[in-house]
Length: 226
Image (tube, rainbow, N blue to C red; front, side, top):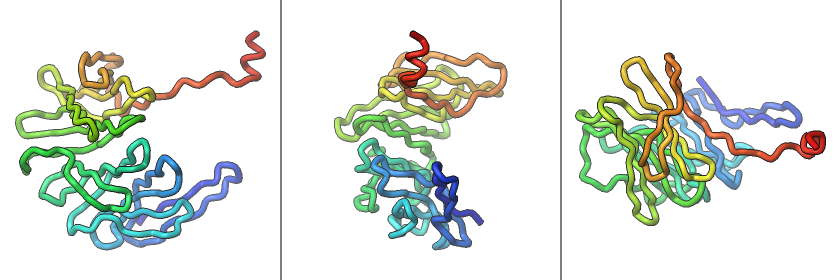
């Protein structure tokens, strides 16, 4: 069905890290590069597994009869955020990288009509943003710091659906998409969710904002510029 491969950029060599007929998907490498967490349906449902970067030491880290997917590492590699329908609807959960101490990110009483997705960790610390949808609210982006307890959110002004949260490299801003009818535009808000500002105006849809960190020019280019 599908497997996970590793590409050596220096040699161009490609090597399979998994070999299962039921499918392996969405690998995410830890910040230190010592673990890879991925989804696999090798045990009949989509569960999370981890392995070493060479494919060794594969082990299952979630253990429910329902699906888990979309894992994301915190900036220090100490926590995982992922999505699961283990309680009857898609919600965001946190755990340690070995699967211990799973807890739901939002503490309010469980509501089967609430759907959550797309967890995104801030580049420093333990801030996290994720998408939340209900029957009465197309979607909003919630922001939480799991250590300080800070809470923020981004809401659409009027009808609209928010998605695809992406933190700036310095953690000061959050980009996201806002969908109204056929229009999908990219916005940027402050890290606490305030002052959302539209940054694209194309008539067609704009999806999946990704930030690029500023880099110093190569030494040769800098010398040539002088």
